[in-house]
Length: 570
Image 1 (cartoon, helix red, strand yellow):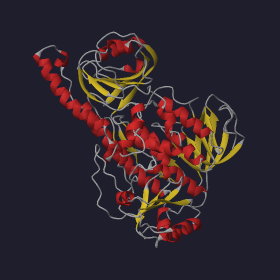
Image 2 (cartoon, one colour):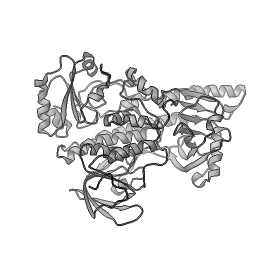
Image 3 (tube, one colour):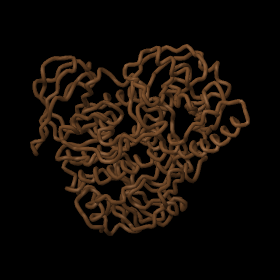
Image 4 (tube, helix red, strand yellow):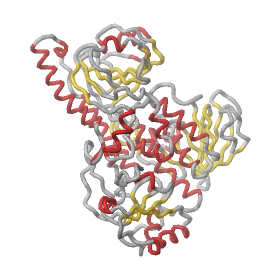
């Protein structure tokens, strides 16, 4: 492969071979490239855009995503971006931004998050808290780390024209987006991470399942988006600053997220019946912004356009032969809850180690199939949660009297405050959504039949039952338990009575026979054995519990199952 540090406009040779061709350079494609590259897997990433995102797009990195960034060593880089470290990350609801505040959920600043996480327990026992940062800042970090991998070639300004899955490989044709000679690529696998209008999905003929066209007063139907600079916005606010502000009134429903904590904002307004914003000019953008603010504020427009809310769509299949779908190509969300980007990142985390195993010949027949078996139900779950959040805020009718300085106005604001206070906690305090996703129908999980806690958005009960995120704890030396995990497979031996080295060597021997990189990690604290309800737990490379038990007698059968070679529990 060409030098990953070469300029993106460089030409590929007439024919190129790679292990994985990734189409799409957003968070999903870049994360996949990082995960593959750190395992030495050759991959070529192409994206038709000339560079990473200019517009803010997604604005919230959930805690589980931050845990993966931590695992890869750059969570601190992401947390240093976006809002200043002491900027509030509250979400606040107003009649208009310059008028009455209706509700607010207070959340820790970036600086507070790294301190508070060490003492948080229960639902929020985690290695990282969420971070409010625009996707436009995250993508350059991901790109930089992808390009540092010697086996990765990142090529913005290149378009996939066509591909053919021959059964033995994928033959693809790519071309510089600006024009130039076509290049041919032979890849073992192709991943379409090319967004909602995915050309890969269309060529495969895979259709959407789920619901679209959902209409609501807010967050259902066409939305008008403006990326803007407004230095004077803070001067019209009568209340403390927040990260996200939501306008709830009968004139113009909108939400707006601070991009840099100073003057840049991502503003999104719902359109009223009969409005067509596709051809709106900057004067219209200024008018709509003033309608949400309730005052005239000078703005500089950086970009503007429309998008459609009201999606809860999941592709009918995530795999066809040697071709896979991931990210927005596989699932499309209404952005309530911030689940689209975060679900996309975890798609990449799930798929990468499986593709790496397949390239190395260490994957059983069920391992690649397990990507769809695990991620498709998870996408359906997350789109349901996002729709529930959108219904909660979008079906609430904003009464005309909300802004009145009258008894009727006071009563209307009290009712709105009560509803929006409940909604804010429903949508923005979601450890259950963030940490509670499970792979209970996966063919590569050794299920133990334990009674599972309910899957609720606002409550998370840790469980080491195989198929979910490992329970988290802070170690006596100040590290996260996750920091002690091996980069690939980890066999946790927990508590003072865990099987000794002679016994756990059965797993090490079975791993060597399968060319698996497995390490035994011991923690003698009784509290960890109690937390995991077993002295042994096998952790996958994507930090999911694959098996737990009390003895090592079935090590060979366990590793056969979790690598796709066995279909019955050992």
